[in-house]
Amino acid sequence: MPEGHTIHRLAAALDELYGGQSLRASSPQGRFADGASRLDGQVLLGSQAHGKHLFLPFGPRSDMPLDDASVTWLRIHLGLYGSWTFDGDREFTAPHAIGAPRRRVGERGEHALKGGGGSALTGLNGGTSDAVGTEGADDASSRVGPDPEEWEPPEPRGVVRLRLQGRHGVADLTGPAACELLDAEGVAAVRRRLGPDPLRADADVEAFVTKARSRRKSIGELLMDQAVISGAGNIYRAETLFRVGVSPFRPGNRVSEERLRTIWEDLGPLMEYGVATGFITTVDLDDVPDPLPPEDPEAGRWYVYHRTGRPCLRCGTPVAEREVAARRLFWCPSCQSH
Image 1 (cartoon, rainbow, N blue to C red):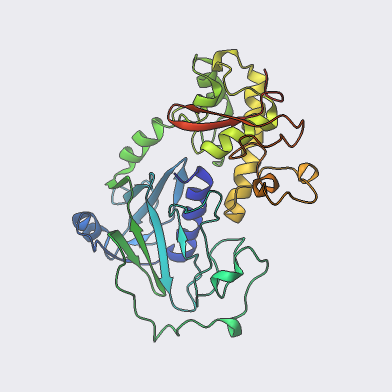
Image 2 (image 1 turned 135 degrees about the horizontal axis):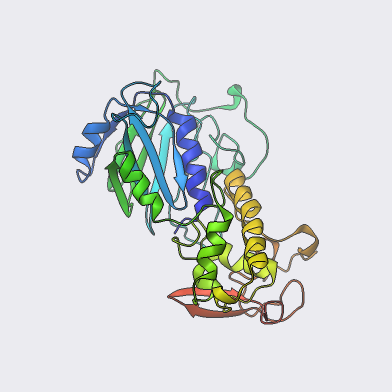
């Protein structure tokens, strides 16, 4: 399942691509036909993310306040299989896809849109998919995509729940766990069920501390509980607990307030880096092996995640793995003994 930084990155992309535009909305699959008909011709007023939930407000005019009763909110949760794919002319700045399931652990998952104008997001370059991860912006002369007047929207591929079409390109949503229309109170009700999100400016670290300290479940489980803290997934859970030296099996009510705040303070910058680049990297440069072992490529990105049996980058103890709540949990038995 995409972690929270992906949803914030997606929100930023959709806002840049479509914010302030009147969009065509359709449901090629048909399952969201009524909802799409309500959104068709409406203006995208912005975008918001809270944990793994995406909220898109639509209204008849671009100058509408978000609390206006006529604003309709689209809520999307990608779940395990949901993704957005993009296509457009040479003016359309977008990645090829965000949220699509990866075929390999650690695969970036975002490739520059071939023939498009680069990416709506920092961290990707334009041109072809081979440009992924390079720095800098492409110039117009290097773009090989169709002119705006020549581009035609492609036929939907796969089971497309929702298609949003703007002036220069389309965004197709497939396989979401949730895709529904809400009013402002409905959005507020969803958000009340969620814990604070380290990537949101309105996040309250004390709410996280209070919720974690009130539970006997292990901190490793609590970091995956979206009602305790929103957005962290399996990779961030494993990596931040290693980085702050906390055992994933320590009950939440036995983790000090100070250490819980340290976890929060560590998660924030890690997830912000993910938003900026579309790439989860948690290893400090001083801890990256030189040279990088060819049999352990993850050592350049992660301390413990997906490194079972390989030496801890700090103490050399083999990284351990255990299934907890149907998810694989990774930790260093030595560095995280408390």
